[in-house]
Length: 417
Length: 149
Ligand SMILES: Cc1ncc(COP(=O)(O)O)c(C=O)c1O
Image (cartoon, rainbow over all chains, first blue to last red):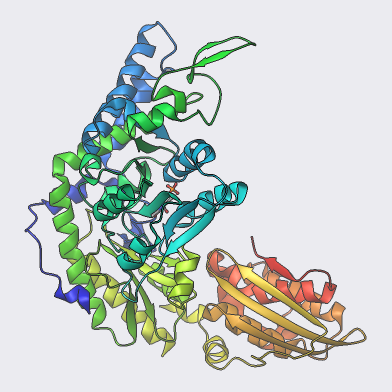
């Protein structure tokens, strides 16, 4: 197993007791047992700081943004734009103009497909994605390819869950307009070499979008270092509220793109003859945005930065190695996805037991895991499983919780023996 | 563990391990696919009728223990029943797994009673009823696939 050959990284200095106290939901019981939340790839729990920030917004600052001359509107706008600055710094983007707030990763990808894609993808062109993408980084490209008569090409994956870079390089001909790749696979945990892949795509003249839904939660993301053209992520997977996300885009590209939704905020002036669009990033933020969500996202990123993103990643890496080793002790358990470079997401199947049954039995123990196809049906087909169980670890999880998972799986085996 | 033992009764574990009528029925009069998109359960139900009487039901596919055992028990229970009787049985079964037991006549249920524990697990009702929904569609003879969503 390649996972076990991974060496432990730098030790984390996370003060886990304090961190766990920051998340009120971790104190609750589920079915009479202490909650063991291992479904972080689906969504993460929220720290008190984020909850408090949202309460403060509604208790003291609520107003519409960019619209009023009155005091509260100024305060709300300042908080909203302050969050944009936090996101910009977090991603190491060059300018706040490059940070567009959306509803989430899905909307960010659709924005690029509908705005950039409509204009730049034509008949006979090619879009490259990979065999391990989430449905939200498949379907928007299928839609645009269907509409334009373009071809969707798929980078194959090996049995460990790693993309074939050789095949990828061969695909990169001059018809390729866009490469859209996940940073980290939500179903397998594979960390893709996105910096290298971006470099190769650029050499072939293609634009690169990274689906960072699982990237931002698990490590340092530096969009300038990656040099990708677009990077999309969701707030709710990084300890922020649902309903808010980000599209990072290089300024020149965003500048040249048409808006994709029309309405308030995205205009400078409207007459029935002619409308002048607002400047970046407002051109892409039509209508009243999710203000509390954006402010909550800013707070969540501030929280993680406080802990240290690399520190969190080191903590999670230790959990990955520990949990992987413990799970491999279980007879009949197979880990799906054993890439050399992996984040703390572990998909597995248990011989003779369907994942759905595993999920129900673990739930009785207060352990929350995801079971199913993880919005990656083509990937499930590739590995010839209808579904998997998935334990995904976040910054507040512990080795003890990995032990409880293993105990729970022994109960599953007991029921089905 | 007690709720779990209620859910995963011996009958269910047995039918999951050794599903009955688990095969294709070449030349079947009706063939309908049933999906549960949430968890990926996927079965095909094959049906032969003799007038209004169910002569044979078989199924193929994959899914959790509850869905597979339910399909298996169903396939043996409805054999020889009329369309109306089978539909009635489904209604009764549905009441059982959703916990609406006021109308359930235990005598009528036979081996289907093994699914009584499902009512404590609302998330699993769809698993228990997937094959039945699929069979009902086959009996109506109109569609070729259904989903539980
Ligand atoms: C890799 C990946 N891409 C995209 C998404 C979609 O994110 P959202 O549903 O927040 O838009 C997810 C979340 O499930 C994901 O894990």
